[in-house]
Length: 107
Image 1 (tube, one colour):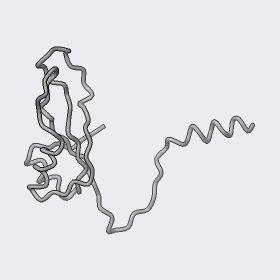
Image 2: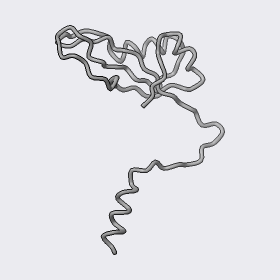
Image 3: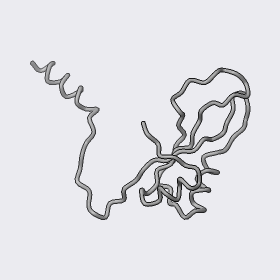
């Protein structure tokens, strides 16, 4: 019985925790843009370059990370590698970010 309870607890540990947020809480959304990097090359943009684009447009970056498209790419030097710059921003800035070429990041 104790083993079943332990397994149940471990199995549920990955579920999201929901909490109430105040009306003043900032609503965020992730946006992305291609790093334009290519296989076998030291090419493309850096996260800091894309972050600077957002900041120049007066968009506050709450978090940043590197991601990928999740697609398979041909393994060939010079071919795209699918790397993305992913940024968390305030949802009110989404339209400004999309005019810069950023797109909403969906999982």
